[in-house]
Image (tube, rainbow, N blue to C red; front, side, top):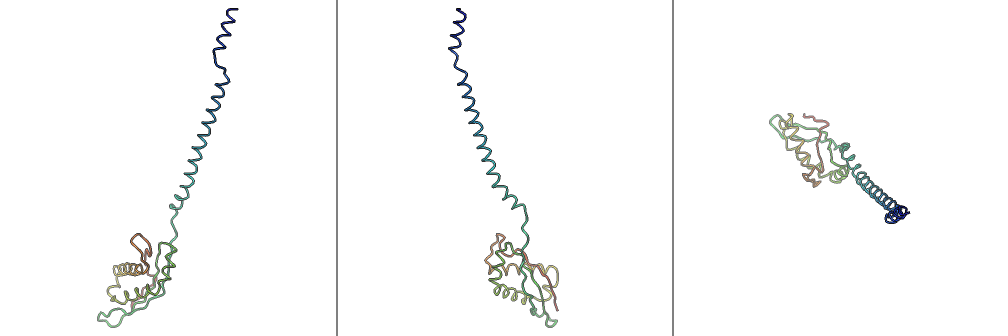
Length: 165
């Protein structure tokens, strides 16, 4: 009997196993909630970043504005009167710039006409002359648009026809 009494006292000294089971259950629930919260935070930060990366990855389609054909008298270079007839397309950085170009069209056409009529046939006949003229037209067109050097406004000038007579 002394043995039975010693066993009973040892069993009475040990805490009940139900409390340990509850502790593990509470810790398990807290761990699961923490994992779910972390997973949700990761998901929402990744889902916000994904569309932006995909938007940057897709190149925007180019937007062009076609100007009416220009016909001007070139500066006399000793060979009599010479004429330049040129078709121009403008590559713009944003579709909103198209509206700005249309709004400022009289100023743009005036600037381009004055620039073209200030040139001689020799200045615009070669490849280098055409490239320089393209850059000058781009600068002239961006003036009324108040485009800065940050890449806004007209990004390129392309000749669709170029006839010197």
